[in-house]
Length: 329
Ligand SMILES: [Zn+2]
Ligand SMILES: [Zn+2]
Image 1 (cartoon, rainbow, N blue to C red):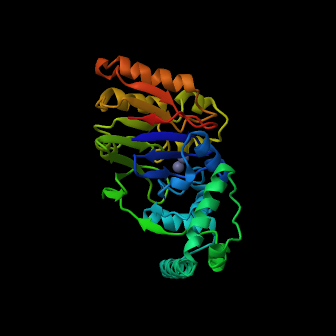
Image 2 (cartoon, rainbow, N blue to C red; image 1 turned 60 degrees about the horizontal axis):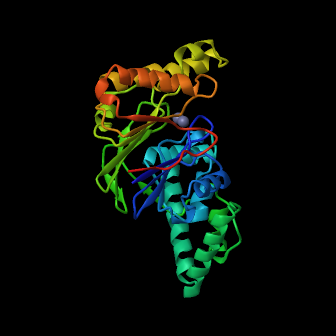
Image 3 (cartoon, rainbow, N blue to C red; image 1 turned 30 degrees about the horizontal axis):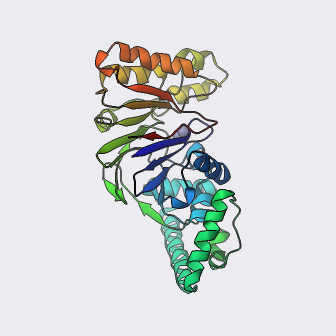
């Protein structure tokens, strides 16, 4: 299995998880163009992605979602709560009743059925043409919405920024599979509609992703057992946040039980609750204003030093501006 962190931080989050047969993108928090560019740079061909999974609807996790999913024609996995929150965010309205939401879901289904029927009408060579066109696009990332025949069939969808080629729902705590990757979503405490982290398992390797959480509740501690590669939030240094430029209301939000993990909270988890099984711990979602990579690293390393069984764990720092080298196990 392989984890490639394309970006991590409050300006955008996205990570590729792949097995030998399956490749999924977790979050799409950069523009479609930038995501394609970073995937190619990191050696992860965007055309071979099987699905996009979304942790929660905050902009730094979904900025490029609609355009990328339509461009690649792949399904998006959400919880229903996150999907609904995303739709409301992309198409702002003062209110959307549950009846209107159900109506929206029904219309999306019909639009997808029409698009599928139109695609089935294309001559057989059409598929190869569109595949080679997709391959071409992947070498020159172009995220405009092109005027291809199958797209014109989706003309009603094209005008709707919430249209997705396919939507699948999952529930936190309930395992599901995409290809040969087993995925267990777990609830995290964060100020979004229905936020979650994920454990991915394939080929005997387990990888997990836990960022955007205000504290470490027991269900998250339990989920992060026997993990081989762990992407874990280390958002802010408490002193830097307190003295930093954020308005008081934002500082309170970050510090709250539904905000973000501080370096100290992450260190406490590593020292007291973590089982030490990971070959790599990737510290992520570092704040650019309220943290410094070396502070985050030092804090985690000190926690490890107090716990000699953890010294085999390598600590890496995920970055906002460039992808990390792929981590393969
Ligand atoms: Zn968030
Ligand atoms: Zn975030």
